[in-house]
Length: 400
View 1 (tube, rainbow, N blue to C red):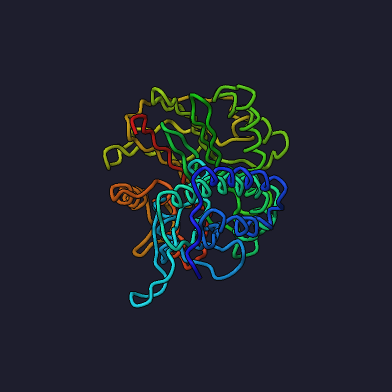
View 2: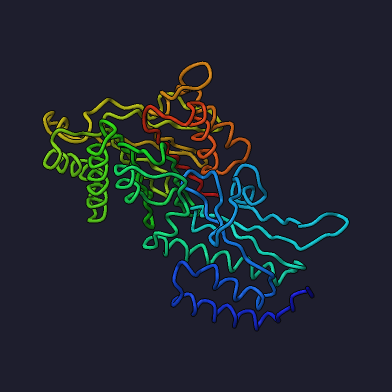
């Protein structure tokens, strides 16, 4: 087949406008067909879209076909590092086309990869590939909110009802801007019980919450769901951190009086690096600075869990503060992480933090460091966790 005709730059922009117009009337399940229809006009042979599965182990082609392992493919390398990679098909004697792998990222959230097949890679084609990847990442993010097909492609197992309920309320794994990033992982992916997390951004503040409800059943999932709703309700009406926690105390005491959950609600001032938090019977946050844990830097006196225990105690929730330095990382976690069994015994705090420090020192993205760690926990226990394990990492980098 002859080399795909090179399209002048101006014509390329017109084609992009037509593509965007067609996106509005294209069903989510026909997205791959639409991309293929425009590929040749943009100077590309073919475009393949891959979405990552729920556990971030595989990249699944949206048009069907063989999955690619995140840890054992060039496409997976692009996903792990968010870097462009070019692969040549065929062999040295009879080279074929080039495949340009680009990450699909919406903000800080890694969605998958795009594989563009080309005869020749020049600046015009590369620019169009990058533009196409940016547009499609936003489209996939918006469409998967109401298209079950996208959700199904991201799953490799059947999900339990409690997990389905909590998962439907969780935000993207990663959010961030030029000053800070928050990223989280949670297992077991398909049999989740009572763990949950939330994070959000305003112009000046990063908000984060981690929750661990009592038990591992439907009631636990309902507790976490109600607590997440209470956090968001208080936050979105402008309530303080104390009001947010007390809102959760009240709604759990009223609607699920036999249930409670531990948790931490935190806020980070993006300009000053001031971390503010309430700890409700939860393991204290950990501070990592200059590749070492600052012992007991964020330890605070214990308080009752959220729900009826807090109401019965009659205490006023306490707010704590600490000044971060540029590059600091704050770890929030549930006890299912430190109690996980590794070779030789429980992971513990030392093993947990050492893994994060090694990964970040090697230049891994925060989201990738958590992905690798949670996989290690699951694999060491033969894919069966005794308790939910959730990790949320906040990094403040105002000078990045």
